[in-house]
Amino acid sequence: MFKTVLLTKTTLTPGAVCRLTLFGIALSVQCSAFAAGADPAGTPSHSNPGFDTLHSIQVSKSQTSKKHKIKLYSDARQQVLFFSATGDEGKVYQLYLFDMDGRLVSQTRIRSRETTVLTNISEGNFLFEVFTDDERIENGQLTVR
Figure (cartoon, rainbow, N blue to C red):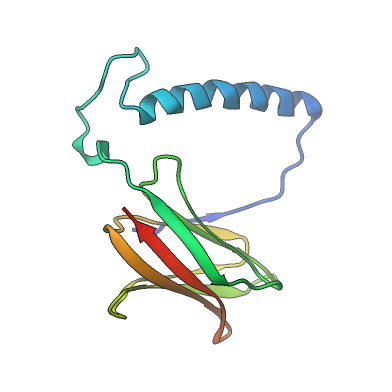
């Protein structure tokens, strides 16, 4: 259900940046066609029922930490939610996701400079809180439609 990915710092040459930019443009054209429900050949595709319905995931933060950089964002198809944190080396960050009745729906932990993926989030309104060292450093609301 959760996948943690370690982020590393990479230096690219100007030629590599140019090639990556061209690749990104080509990929964005393919992704927009795929998101619209077409296969790469341009014909409508309805063979994958799990991804026929696109969700809208909106995140609004109430408290923002200046010492820690917390990111909650969705993928391009808005099917999953990414959680990443950057702060002091080795810090552990906990994300708690609650429904509007205050019941804990999901929780996960990551270390600084890691990203995890939250999947299978049902439609509705949620509250989230992010803690490190037993201190709340960020909170807000998440809406999945």
